[in-house]
Image 1: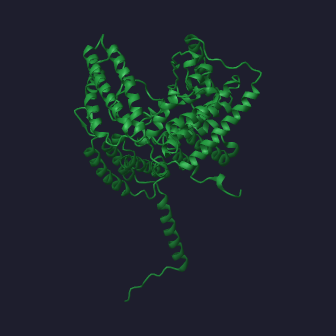
Image 2: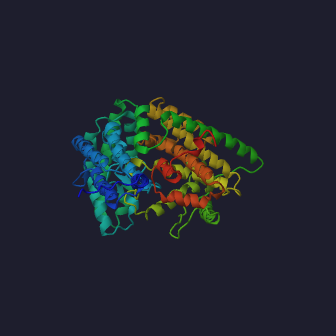
Length: 546
């Protein structure tokens, strides 16, 4: 008897086809399997270990041969990352993959363009006295710097070993640096001389501090200082023979923004944005000054005691405002120390001291940095915890802190400080002006003297006078770390865009506290990535029709 062949009815066949298609579509949307994402986190751990230099007898190896070996090894890591299939991963995990890719692109850019180990003496910092208010030191620096702020005096046994190891390594580090700096440029050499003069003073003060309880460490500090002085002398004899230009040019700047920092604006766009913010700040300042013309001007504190009273009151007012106005959730662990601001006579004040001495509250809004650091200490995410390499966090960290000054002013924190509103606009003008100077230095369109003159002229009230040490130090940083000088304003603009987008998406359901709590939950990653996670990636504001 012949076998009967089952032939499904057309309707049944149609249903089978539909279900197959639906299952296929659903499969694309399923979250990644734990093992797949684990491949990324495992690679990330290996990558972070690889990205560190080899340490030989306490000295990080940045020699030409070591860097060439690292460059070759990077290719393998990039291939391994590309081999991870992210199909079906949720947005947050795909963005984690992009973060790892950006870090690898950052090291690639270091080898292709920046090459700080061969070009920039500032890279060979050996001692840091103060903790940065952002996730990591703003200036690129060698691995293993002696961070004095991480220790308490008198030193315990563990700290004594750290000090001895790091101080003892300084002569060898600087000896290696002399051999590595084969591509040094003039501005970097000049800035290096100035930086090493400061380090020499710091090591002298450290030796004096160590002498009573740790005389053997004091001796090591003295020897380290001698090595710094010798290196400084070598730099001083060398840098004048080098070409001054130390920038990377517009094309490389655009590549760095696109591939590494994931900033959607290149050199030309950033210049336009900064010019617009500078104009807006100066225009708003003119109106604030008119509005306050009948009020007494703000005068700088006349004594350290007066300064201390002002600071304590401002910290208390700032923290109370955040809580009372429901700006964001304030966990019990969050606090803000009373900043210790040294006292100078008025003729010695440089920009930020001019602000602090008149009314600390506007600049304290920028100190949301410290509250963020307390939050990030508790971040256990396998990729987003800790500081991303190549300062990829700059648009997020500095953009928020800069915008927070203006946002809190609009929210009412300065309602009883009318003349302090003028200081908020002065802060924005300064950051925009110095950012423009940094861009022009990177492109080689201005000399350092021209950038200094521009920054001084467009900073209100003479708060950054000709030759401002603060402005000069900023330009050293902005040449060393392209895009950092613009990140304050460019990051601010990106946060404005995100707030606007969410306000359009949510309408009257938009709540400031909910927005910031959501914003903070994404970690210290590039502003453009947070925008994608919070908005879904589509810009309602770019549509031509409602």
